[in-house]
Image (cartoon, rainbow, N blue to C red; front, side):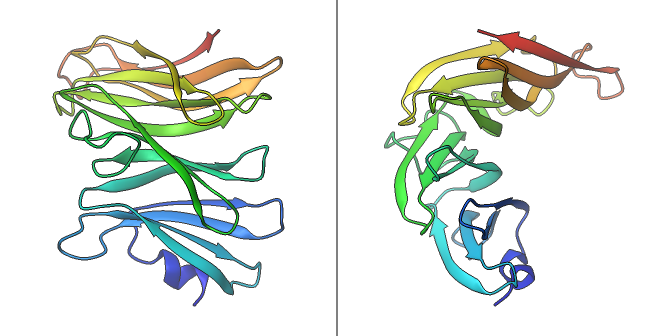
Length: 212
């Protein structure tokens, strides 16, 4: 079973080369009519031979957006979930997901972060030199597509919540699409914002910001 077959049918796919000279693919898509979307992670040799495939999720919708290999050689995945995480009940219709697995596909821990009455998605993640994790994403207010805030959150190396900051007028479109650590672990986020409430035709402004 090759990479193309393993990724077929998935809405979101992320791929990285690992430190042990293999490829890991993470995707999300419908597994069955009763499962709206699960996360599937697969490891391949460079010739496309499958080494292992693992599935993560529950009865809700679980979506992959970004994946990196951490300094400890473990895999970090972010996206959104309505069924898995460290809390037994998700706080909104979907929460930001942070998942950690080893290079054999074994789950080390899973966390979810969110606020009531909001649907939140992690879009990008990065790790600083101490192993702390930053996630950038978007929070849809009351599930309204045209009303969103950008969100940046940070955890410790075990995925425990440290802090979160929201940016942008909640009655407009805002999203933090990428996050990076540069220089001496300076946190940089990139995103966009819509200057006009509920107007898809209004100009979209890009931004870059530095956070302590």
